[in-house]
Amino acid sequence: MKNRIVRAVAGIFILTSLLLAHYLSPNWLWLTAFVGANLFQSSISKWCLLDTILNKLGVKD
Image 1 (cartoon, helix red, strand yellow):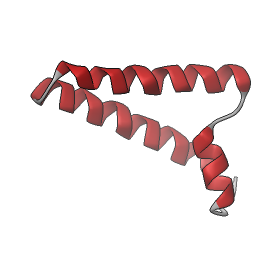
Image 2 (spheres, helix red, strand yellow):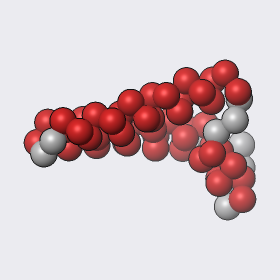
Image 3 (cartoon, helix red, strand yellow):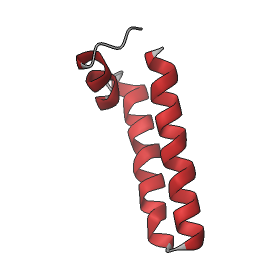
Image 4 (tube, helix red, strand yellow):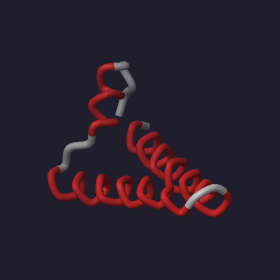
């Protein structure tokens, strides 16, 4: 369940930042880059902040 939530939140952030970049300002693409970098970092280190937060909230695997 946690993996699905993490992927859904990442997808929502990416799609939202793309929409904001298209309609408001291209600077919102920095949010897309940040999310992508965080996904890459978590694939290497196997640590994700949202995963830690979900653990503290009691979300099961």
